[in-house]
Image (cartoon, rainbow, N blue to C red):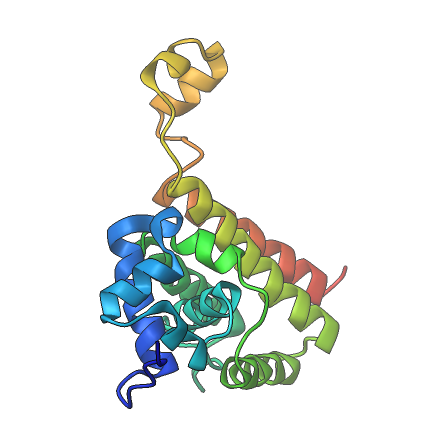
Length: 204
């Protein structure tokens, strides 16, 4: 059977379709065969554009990471405000995709375009007093924090029965709105992160 290398089938079309399919079936249901069927082609046709499923996941993760708008701070924006904006936008983007954090966690490489944007961010931080290493560690650590937080948010919620068996102080904390997941918890983590970064940038 001849391989269908239709002109309209591009790597970007595959990634966009895979992201849409992800929202419908989740990461477990996303297969190369399912993607090919969605596009109305045979599976071998996809390998003209994406050689492996890992390459497809890398492309999907790359699109998710760039969706919030990567790039350096605005001219009138402090590095603190920029990191807060970046983290919040990234979390929103991950939450907007079913299994979004899991897709990013499975990524093994980023596109040259994304790496170039990351370089611009590191350069801007260096201009604001960060060493290259501290800039890299700061952005990477913040990214891992958001990824991990959203992984928990997108996981199954604890059952009411398990909360009934929680110790007294934990129950009191939950009643006060101190749950480990949600907007308040996420913002608390961001404040701690910014304070810690400030201390690392200006050691006493």
